[in-house]
Image (cartoon, rainbow, N blue to C red; front, top):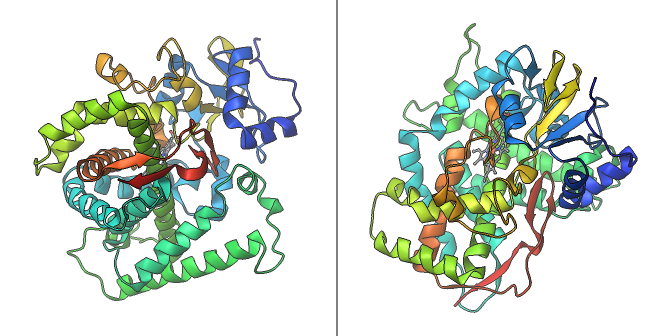
Length: 447
Ligand code: HEM
């Protein structure tokens, strides 16, 4: 029996390295062990956890995750519960998970996307209009303002009015409490969140959770009381959905799913956009090529056509490759003894696709630390070689919306604003909760 290689660094030290310096942790283990290794980084589940970065292994994982061999139990994502609630699709299993996805996925595709295009364009211009010439601002914060409004529009069908303004502010405040690698520790060790009064971190989180919940439940009550069959937002779809027994979703289920979409749906995209602005303004050659492509299509009213521009798309793909916002996929679980990469895995073992290491394999992406969008034009990468949105049964439900937002927001702002990057040193990626984000948020200003 051939076992997966593992480091003899104590588990607690590995977990701290994973939280405080995730890239260093992954690179060191990749250099020592290669395509797959055991990582002792799960603070909750005692079963072994394997990180895979070879495309063939990842393909096996993500094409077998609904079989008798491999599953994707929601319980393995328990760390998301304090933020999203136990009824979030991220914590559901099997049939329940599949049914919830069937409800949520359709509005993120097809005709609805056209309507979102107009909202994205309008919201980007609204936020852009608040920038003052010569006054520095953080591009990540600005992007978060845009993506938050977009997701409020998609989920609730509105982003104006007192309730939405408050929700926007409270969600941003709540997420901003865990923006540094050190505060991210609380995501991995929720037991350290001890409520020592209103000024402690736990006290602040408790107050914010309470206030956010009140707003979301108030919206649910109002919509239940006055149903409008013409509305096409996600809350309306979820409110009218019935399962095989004719049962609708409870208030708690609706609340948790709305929170999931609101949070998963804007943080990640804002970070990806901030990186895209950084690279485009750091590399003059990329800037010129992109501006030349955008100039030709400047007056195209068809937003879907803009979103398909080849160099713009390549810039967005390369952004998601070089600093993937999600470092790993959600864990999958081995149910029957199986072999991966010649190693024997026992039932109970957890496996995650390591997106960061996959995206930095020199055999797939030569000179992998160089930002070079052309690689996506010269070659077609398979879904198991380029994996920013994961795959299989838990593939990101918002992948198409995120790409649409990235291309439209980037093109709208570049077409209308002359921005300057104020960072002279290279900006490093650091942990931000469960994601990887630019350290400091990237300062820019309008010229
Ligand atoms: C650049 C932006 C984004 C990135 C990089 C990203 C990445 C990911 C990744 C890697 C996963 C895990 C997939 C797996 O385990 O195989 C995921 C899942 C998920 N994402 Fe995204 N995402 C982004 C934007 C969004 C948006 C805009 C939404 C919603 C509107 C969203 C909602 C979700 C949800 C609900 C799941 C869980 C799916 C499930 O459990 O079945 N994400 N995302």
